[in-house]
Length: 241
Image (cartoon, rainbow, N blue to C red; front, top):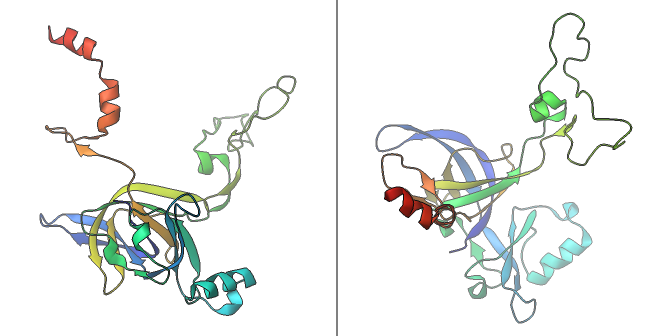
């Protein structure tokens, strides 16, 4: 079932599982999110809802934003985000979604804006290799190096690594486990790290991955569709003879 909510990253901590092992987790303030707009298949061609999160003053909103929220009859929202949910048709403008839309052991994908690192060179930004630091090699040990011939192609191809702004871009971490949900505190705790700094806005959605645990000692998670595509039945039968 497709579920989603908007939240704010509180920070990281650790908990102990039943076996006494330390589990690194991220605490997220998820919701409450109000339904600001509803789209239907009859009118827009698809079903979705727009959720609003976070209180904000009037002076921080533009005139179109104020009119959009006033039409819905809801309070000012800092963040607006549209989601295609399985129960979009059941929701109405003004409904409130809380953290309990998710439950423990759910798998989620979390999207956020990564921490900005400022201007960085190719070694820090892309992991490029530096030149030998012996005699005669300086002073360009950490430079990007040659970009190619000046005659042909006489240009730099798109995607070429180089120095520039590092971080501050959208990042999605997939298939995280929901460890704990507390609707009274608007809290969702997930295993592992989440993109962005403390206080950063994150979007929590049901994972797009369909994983099954492979039986055996390896305990490897595989995608059944990709696994079946990799196996050639003719070669498999030939190996068993």
